[in-house]
Each structure stands twice: as structure tokens, then as C-alpha cells.
Image (cartoon, rainbow, N blue to C red; front, side, top):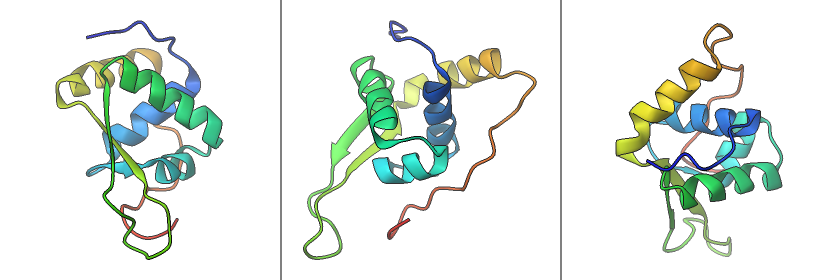
Length: 108
């Protein structure tokens, strides 16, 4: 498990959303759920992907004609316990941050 990345508030927000997700989420859904800007969320996702904490894959084609493909993210299954431990260590008393629940389908 690579923990070479810096742990920040946005990183904890992204981890929390990915842990709560019933499956893969695309970047826009993560942005909406965390209420963080696109550059912030995608930088966190890139760091987590490089560290092996997140798996990312492009969809073959968007379900709506004429729209660009999306990239979907999920926590690497072996990392889930470490992600939970990191969240409980860094956010023990505050609990989860209030946010909208991400939707897996359609536009958000």
C-alpha cells in the first residue's frame, strides 16, 4: 500500500464518497458529492490512482449520443480497509461531511 500522497481535506472527501458509493462513480458525480471544484477532484483522483488506491477506466461510449466518454473511478478493493482507517484517524469525531448522494446514472 503506497501512502506517499499528502492527506488533505479534499482527499478525505473523495475517499469518503468512494467508500459510500455502491459502485463506480464518474468524476462529475464525485465533484457534485464533495462540492469541490473539478481541478481539485481530478488532482486527488490522479494522486490516488498513481498510488494504487483507485482504479480508473474509460467507458466505451457515453449512453447518450453525442456526449463524450466518462472516466469511472472506484477504490481498489484491497485498499478499502486502509481508506476506512485513514478516514477514522483523520475524522474521528466529526463524522461524515454533509453532501448530496451521488447518482450512478444520468446527469447530475
